Image (cartoon, rainbow, N blue to C red):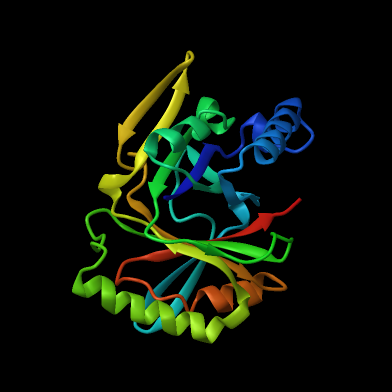
Length: 234
């Protein structure tokens, strides 16, 4: 089964600032993890939250604001997709990530996942979010209607879509923290988040304006949004 791991840590913490010993150590640990973890089939670090574009649809128009979807102490700074046998196997992978000790990791089972090629610096992660309580159950009529809209987006975007997948509802997610050597698990996504993850696309675009224009065409629920961040490849 595929799992999406969203890696969250303090936005301006030492590990997020290039040039610090903490950042260097974190990057080394991620490189070692990526080399060894055969279950990691996709992933990447994300550029600073201050460079985020948040996109909402209002009255048929895309409204773009700078910055992440909400002010939180811990901001998503990267992601992995695991092809793991079960939740326990996915949790054993999460335990090895630096962010689990300094922040938290949201682990989401995925309804599906596809990917193409290897990340480069013109790739963008478009994380779909929606308010709590508005998740649609996979297989329902509303779900199937939404899938039709996403298929249309795929036809429009063509090979500019490099990956993507939908998530199961928030009751299936697990928030993971490692404190004092003990793995702490909480059901559901982070309690800080009023809007929770719903799916993810990986998009190819030459610059921010082109990425925003493409991500603005992703279908959303009435109060959903897209959090668009450039992937830091390599």
